[in-house]
Image 1: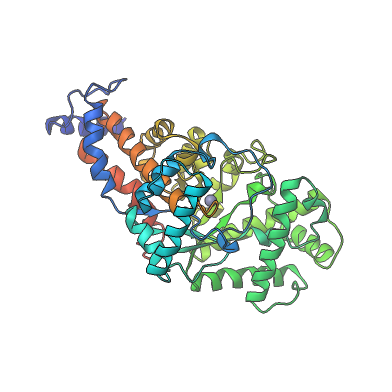
Image 2: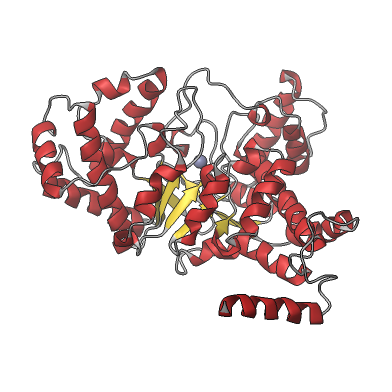
Length: 446
Ligand SMILES: [Zn+2]
């Protein structure tokens, strides 16, 4: 009750400042909403952003992701190659002179990029792209870092899934064509971590395996890694049991050197390793990023990877010193997802939502989030180099532009509906585009 009185008092003081026409919020925006939008957008365009989730790189670089796209998957409308907005992206970034992306015209774009890569050698090229979209720094969620990305502006987020796959994966890879692509890449990633640590075969017992995992995390952190990322929803259900260390140790000793665990046995082992990694994320101050949304591939199982499956982990007090970032904010379950951010250590990233949806729909997502936990939401693009023509450059642009427009529109409605003042709206814009995410890394990013 005391809280209610306080918030009523703050509303009245705001009215006293002349920020609101009414003390009671209205259900519809007024005729001024367009004007407010036009006024906000240029100010929002000027806010230097921190991109909390992206896959920068060139299309021929296999380290852009720890997994690959499965064959012949169904693309949602806006993420198809023929999206005309990508022509707008090429115009804005490169002065593309044509109105279509026919193969002949696309050659112009490839030649232009080749020329610019020469002009902006080394790390200068992607820095120049960030400058063009007013992004100060962008997470590089990549298998390994690239020498053509400036670590000052592209902090590395590495992948942690491969630690879940140390056994014989024959049955798991055969589950469907998508897993046939994904799981062997996890095996490859695990071997790269082993190479990094100079380990030629798996340690003989669980203690040794956990030590090896910690060593990789610590080394990745000292190489500039700011967080670990799971895309586990692509590989198995995101419901995690809570097995004992003895159970995990028994399974490790039975299968580390051969034999195929049953599905149940493998998942029990993975449940333990996942929880161990979450604890290590707290100990080492490495926030844990988790893919929480639909995924590419026709076999991606939405009900088994529902973001709410993670609730028992996120609300477990044992993990309160671990910072969690729900990458893609649970889309299309972003309405439920925002209530997970009630936990002080849980944050939502909006990337992919701004690409999967057009700004008119993404505006509603952002508005609902801004009206709930505006201090717990962060901006990201999920940019990715789709191919030579439609590179990370264009998806950076589309993601950043879409997010800024949707943000301006959401805030304009909130102002017009007498929910917040214009000054508060701009503070929320800074928080979403930059400050909320940067705070999580304790001075390691800017
Ligand atoms: Zn991503």
